[in-house]
Amino acid sequence: MAQSIPPNEVKKLTPLNNLIFASRWLQLPLYLGLILAQCVYVFHFWVELKDLIGAAMGNVASLQHILDAVTVPGAPRPTKLTETTIMLVVLGLIDVVMISNLLIMVIVGGYETFVSRMHLEGHPDQPEWLSHVNASVLKTKLAMAIIGISSIHLLKTFINAANYPNTDTMMWQTLIHCAFLVSAIAIAYTDRIVMTTHAKH
Image 1 (cartoon, rainbow, N blue to C red):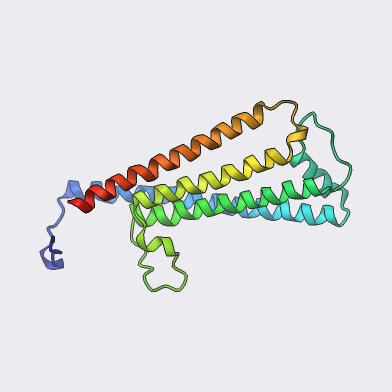
Image 2: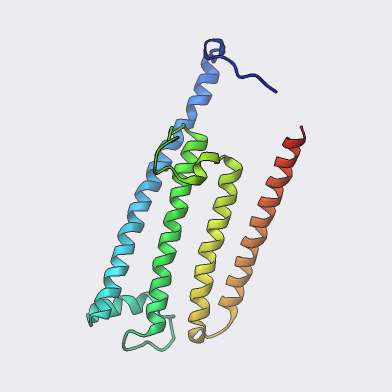
């Protein structure tokens, strides 16, 4: 088993190696940008929720905003808030939450893996998955999150299927979802082979 090198025996990096290693901090603005994108999603969530509550209370403007968001172009437009409309709006809110979760995984996991340690060991709010996160684990979790988001979009399409003029949209969404599933299985299988190989060595 390889022995850890004492801190006082760690070799100093050459200026070139130090520059290349420090270049990882160039990713910091990208993660800060994703935090801003997270803020936009939070704002969008509350706007959609406000419109849903307003439509339920009889606000005409809120109802029109909701119908604009969920009604398929060319399909009959409801005149009031229906169960299907509520379901589509709620699924849209769930979609926003799942994308927000995906952003958190990318921001926190990516920063921890590729930029700098956050030293959250022992913190009561440390995510369970962050304690053993690496590039491989992060990649698999992102694939599973994308499948969940795709499932929400597919469910919204199936609920609203009667309003689509043809089945091409549902067919393509189903095929894309299946492609995501196959990709996730391939990623997980590849990671398993790599981990098994490392364990043997």
